[in-house]
Length: 531
View (cartoon, one colour):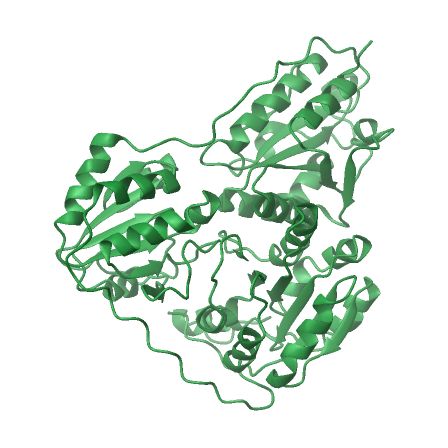
């Protein structure tokens, strides 16, 4: 007799989901019992870290990942990073334990009450199978939904006494498409508008990187001879930032963003929402006389865009087809950005000086995972992203993603055989949200380098307070944190980087190691301009 558990593991093998991220609980142990030798369990010390590790792993491998959570409390612990996975459009198969079916009517301890509602609205689908025999088919349905555009997490609540039940015949193998092409008629209309534009501009988002579309985005930009901006708050980089047509990252707020686009008559947005605005600085969404065209694979982004004509399509396919329809523009390419002046090197260094030094020693194939909100502008202007799948951050705005995500990315680099060096830049406030992820990195012997700019404050919140005219907000300073002692307790090598000039040697030593290294880098504490 084949059990539901055996049928489920067979299905997970067929889907290449043999790595399970999680933190086990009593409601999950019947599933995890006699864990198969060809599977791997990546233990996180808290569910938020497990979710973000799976997110980073899925993004870096380009495949779905499986994370197993502990009934309602575990899902609750993971919710912040589950929201981030939703905004990141990361395909995650989330399974959560549930109490035994025979006791659910009495709601015993650890029952997930209204389990299918708990993770809403941050999952594409949430389901508790009505019968044990429905578990494999439900898993396949969830997987199919997770990987289809817009990709994202799904959740299945699975009672603990289902696993020993006899299985029925499993679902047949299926091939599931994960991309769709643009409507030819609407694409021709977009091409006509662009061909007739005097001064178009291209705005790229993380969808281009998810879709493997860097080369197609470059070809489109060069055909248009248009300047290229990154959409605000992009979770991934959609264009090589050392390309002469790349101009930088657009501002986050409505009025400043429109001002930056002044002079352009057509704005083409590909692979991004229109737009992730914050804070609220009211104004016109576009410069006077400008028209916006929008290409995305997400119907919800189409619906909520405040302006523009939208086309649903896979961004790489759309860029390729659009380039074939367009003539080479009869204008000069835009002038390249002026090089930044060198920063002043003091002690402690400014964030600009620290990141300029990091950029000077950045490995050519390095992967950056960042969560340093108060230093983000300095990091983005000093350290350009020049290769695909080399920049990851959170689209949600919530902290606690970056450090465990970097662990997942580093694990993916090893598993795929690429072995690209992974560096995480994590603010000293962000660092403590999911610091226990360091233990997993140490147990997995991942050569991950974590650079922590230490300013002993929530600098980004001070910037918001200044912008919002809310003085004397409590809880914005972080004195007395010894992050290196904490990191050593989790099994990491540590070092203090006293000067910007010492960054290169410290990073090289960390990447040459056989486990994680945490580098504390004191920086000046000036509060950035939020706009």
